[in-house]
Amino acid sequence: MSDRERKLLSLALECSSANEPGIVAEAFRNYLEARLSPDAVAFVDDKESPEASARDGIYRFSSGKHTFYARIGTPQVIELIGGSAEALDPFEVDTIESILRFFNDKYKTLVELRGLTYTDDVTGLYNQRYMETVIERELALAKRNGNSFAVLFIDLDHFKKVNDSYGHLVGSRILYEVGEEVKRCLRESDIVFRFGGDEFVCVLSNSNMVEALLVGERVRARIEKKRFLAKEELNIRLTASIGVAAYPEHALTRDEILHAADEALYGGKDDARHKVVAANLASTKRRLG
Image (cartoon, rainbow, N blue to C red; front, side, top):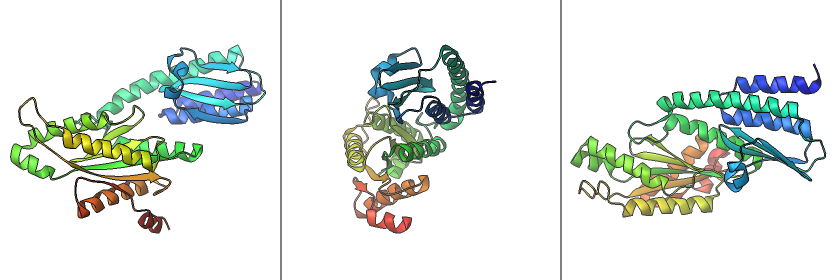
């Protein structure tokens, strides 16, 4: 068995045991770095590359720059900058296509099964369990690529009064509408989760603190403007308090960034509700040591 065949076999075994697209993407990254010896490798958002989103194949090479397209769960682009190695040969391309096809079929089944455990019954949003997975993924991507990302912690003000006045069934329908309103404020790459009760969390991929605060203000204003259950002529009005924290400015781990956003949120509630509040840099620095 040649060295190339051994590396392909190792890649196949690693991908066959993977349960997340990020693991497969990282395996391909390592394979391509070893095989093509590029000057640099980076993951590129497929939204920044329409050609990648529309492309049926999995790779393209051009002069002075290798670009490898891989459909891993959802289209992901691994960009290889520079380097002088030869392109992948037909045998490698066929093998890679088979590996990807196998993983994507397996992943599709996993997604269907996880939908039963990762989705909130009331809002249809992803739940806290899946949020933890997403934040860990964002941490890994941010550390590798030197990016930032942000978390919004959203709490509906005085929502208990809604449940007390209208009942929990109406409250549940309002929570669904709140989730829909928040989604309309986000990019496709961002995700909103129901954290529990009347709390929601948004994970803003590749976003800095300034951008996150703008999103938070957009969410706050949209919730304030909305008449909930208007079709039922209830026209219930709500406001929200929102805490905002960013990696690496306020936190270095999943628990730390959630705590920083949560601390900002409840600091805002102590001061005055219906606000967007940034995490306190001084307090988070003390906590991080």
